[in-house]
Structures are given as structure tokens and as C-alpha cells.
Amino acid sequence: MTTVTRAYVSRVAGLAVFDPNGDRVGKVRDVVVALRVGNAPPRALGLVVEVVARRRIFVPMGRVTALDPAAVMLASGTINLKRFEQRRGETLVLGELLDRQVQLADGGRPAVVVDAGLEQTRTGDWLLTKLAVQEPGRLGRRGQLHQLNWDEVTGLALPETGQGTETLIATYRELNAADLAHALQELPVKRRHEVAEALDDERLADVLGELPEAEQVTILGTLEEGRAADVLEEMDPDDAADLLAELSNVDRNRLLELMEPDEAAPVRHLLQYSEDTAGGMMTSEPVILSPDATIAEALARVREPEITPALASQVYVCRPPSATPTGRYLGLAHIQRLLREPPSTLVSGVLDDLEPLRPETPLTEVTQYFATYNLVAAPVVDDQGRLVGAVSVDDVLDHLLPEDWRERARRG
Image (cartoon, rainbow, N blue to C red; front, side, top):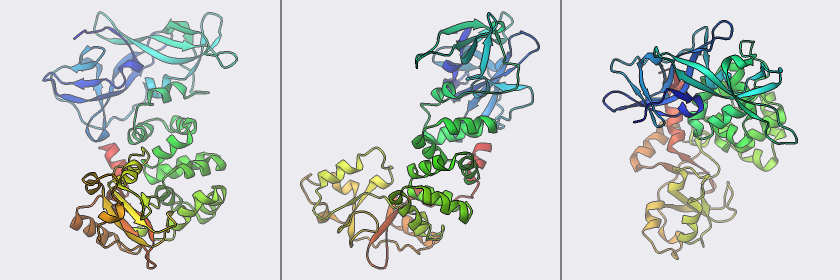
């Protein structure tokens, strides 16, 4: 292991953290520093480390015995698993310093902070001694990049104003939607909304689906109405329906009117059902095939990256039309069965005659149904024999857990 005494925070973020026994503790998500009077470089107080169940804890820098390009090593001792709560006077480097607008001390030219460098002193303390800043570019080009000492930049001690999001979003680029949602909740409210505003529609739609409902409503309310409608169009219809159900009738109807008619139609359909029924939990976009589809076609469909693992576990065969509500529902085929049959075989020849759910089936019966047949997804068919959607096991779990389960998990 190569121990380093200098490191940029963007490279430290995401590093695995290990205890003296070599057991993995978690991952670094941010660095906590204390800004000091005058031009003195801030002292690093500790690391924000994400442990099991995405709980974030604080690890003092004094516990760090080694920092190398691949991992962080901790000294022996008990780790305090209390959820990290930012205290007065503490600053998060990634969450609050990156993308801040500053001025170069030499000439007062404007620039933006894109990274910050830590350096270990002879006494063992870690200080934030370096800043990587970028000047504005011209004609769409990137401006000049500077690596400067802390005291060669001014403006970081001022109240947070005009802070961008480009560098922070780049740092979060590799996070999945659930982890990014968790990271957003750890940011100050103003910063959280700035990042949400800067995410593209598809990414924000995925993240909203992983946030507590109250936070979804708050973020959606900060968006311009046209943008809010665009984000709702990118969400899964069942997630969009759940979010709209939390709004007033006036706001809900206005956003539905702003959505494209073909995107709003399945959401309106789902809003008809009570949220604690199969109809209220289902998605209206399962994998649907015609009776003459082959197994090769079915396997190609379930490989599509936007289909969740639960929905990819089954395909549903229906007579035209193939969009929900479909023509007559004929049956389902499990992916395991399809993998055992010749690719040229018709899917309709290997159907399971499992009795489907009805839209009005209550949550308790849906849960029993999943447990009885060991399913991860199930079809929902109306009184006219049409497939109207499918319930996946993650939707069932969402409704079985307490409404604030995401917030409880975040708080540990």
C-alpha cells in the first residue's frame, strides 16, 4: 500500500474504507472541514462514510492511518455508527465548496471551484491547502484551469451565492438512482434543489422515484410547470401516479394537461384505483407480446435495459392491441421456461395458466398471492379479460413498509 500525504477530494470520494482487520466499513462520500479566520487553510475534521443501508456516519480524521489511491485505512477502536449530522461551523467539501464562484487573488478574475486538495502536515493534521479552479471559457470552450494555494483565492468565506452544480453532478455521475437520492437528502436544502434543477429529465425522474413522497412533492414544486410535466413523463407511470396523488386536484389536473396525451393516459388510468389495491400498485407497461411471437423475440424484449429485473422475469401474451388495456389476455411465460425452449418456439405454446390478479384485489391478498406462487411479478386483468398492468414485488414492498421507510433508513 502506498500511503499518500496529498489527495484531491474528488478522488477520495468513493474510496473504500477498511478497519485494521481488513474488513470493509463503507465508502467515503464527503470530507468535513472547518473554515478558519483570514487566509488560513481549513482543517479537515473527518470523513462522511456511507455504511450499510446507506447510513452516513462521521469518522474523525484522527482515525485515518493511511490514505492511498485505492482505499482509506482506519486505526483500531470503536466506530460510532450514529447518523452524521452537520454541525454549525462545519462545511462539506463536495456538497458546499465545489462549484462555488470565487475570485483569483491575482487580478480578481472570476473562477469556479472544481476540486480541493488535502495535505497532511508534520503534526498529522489534514488541511485543505489547494484549490483547483477554472476560469470561464469563451465560445463554449473550457476556461483555463489553475491549481492554487488556498490563500490565492477569495470569496469562499462569503455567503453561498451563485453556486453552480456541474462539478458536483460529475462527482455523482456513477451513483445509481437510489444512492443519488440518498446523497441529495444529505445536502443543504438550497443546494439540493439546485442539483435537482440541473439534472436532466430522465435522471431526475429516476431519482424522484427513490425519494420519500414529501421530498418528491417539494422538489417537483420547485420546478417550472412545463419542466415538471416533462419529468413526470419520464417517470414510470405508476411512480408518476403515486406522486400526482399527493398533490391537490387543481395541481394534479394542471400537470396532467401539460403532459403529452399518450404519456398522461396511463397515469390517469392508474389514478382511478385505490393505492392499496393491485390496480393502485401496478405498472401499465409490462412486457406484452402477441400470440405469434417467438421465444427469441421474447428474450430480445426482456434484454432491453429500461425494463426492471422484476418485470423482465415474465412476459404476457395478449391479443391486439398490445398496449394496456390490451386485447384478451392469454397467459404468461416465465423467463426460466423460455430459456429452456428452442428460440423458434412460439411463446403462446409455453404459457402458464396462473390465475391473474384483479385491479380491486386488496394489498393483503396481493401479498398472499406473491408468497403462494413465489413470484416477483404478477399480471392484473380486468373484468373484460384485458391485461391492464402488472404488479412487481418492489411495488408490494413499498406499500408494506411504513410510509417514511426511506427517511428512517437514511437516519439509521
